[in-house]
Image 1 (cartoon, helix red, strand yellow):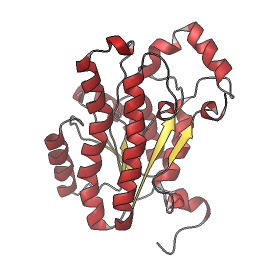
Image 2: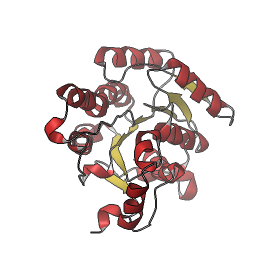
Image 3: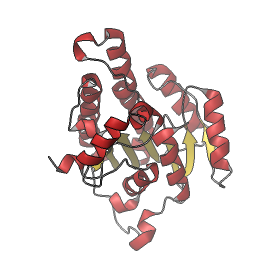
Image 4: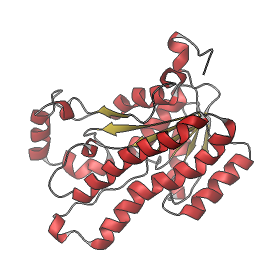
Length: 260
């Protein structure tokens, strides 16, 4: 790629369109807001159309250009049909953030098989489904940015969430595979691995004083992360500033993976 913008203009997303899966709340909603603030038009995705439209209205109130695209990210055929339809209607997706995910906590020896399968479909299969559907169009244009949401559990494990740890390890390696296959077509595929952030997914842990005290002691920065602190990484990886970054997992975790 030549003639890239310099300085802060390299981080501008003006004129780009970003699809963020699982963006009616939590990390997805925060990243969609951040991408919009950097100049992108955003497409929100989720399965609950009422929650999705409410999130879209909140974002529109900030002046953002927002559309919704409801589909189940675990349904391969539904994903492809929705993405193809959006592209046919003129919504060329320049940036994809694969954020849809879930958690299920249980001792591994008692972990329900159906919960394991649902977790893998939500956290891993969805990344393949949406990534493939969007990449088909990006490849035709010779450009695109895909950011998969991994986790601090990509590198570390804790009791009671072994399948989640496995799923996020898979996301990081799928990211490498996507980059290996698609970089030659002009795509940049990377991942963001959040540490412990105050989100609806972590509500039970946030409410647990013992856990929060442990986390503050375990994390070099001594606290939970705040959702806006994920935005910079996402804007960077979505922008021309990251034109030669590919297959990388960027940890945003307050230093927790750097220390014993």
